[in-house]
Amino acid sequence: MKKNALNSYIGFAIKSRHILIGLENIVSNKKSFVILFDKSLGKNSMEKLNTYMSRTSVKGYCVNVEEYYPSRNCKVLGITDRNLASAIINVMKESDINE
Image (cartoon, rainbow, N blue to C red; front, side, top):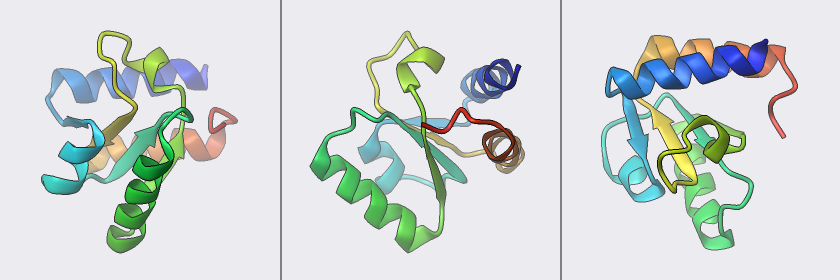
């Protein structure tokens, strides 16, 4: 059930255009409130993402991004809506989706 909720929240973010796709967009554009990344993210990209998350105090969660956003070949998603990000963080805290 929690996986469906996360899928819905990501879908809402995509439809409302409150999402950043890709690491470069996330670190160079407006603030993301939560970041979802794939476990297959490369070493250098992961280091860059960790640096960004520690500098900005943004929470990040490891999920299978392809499962939630299959139409793109991306490894990192940034949610730019505060309310959607808060809902995603609550779902991640309450469930075992985080790998």
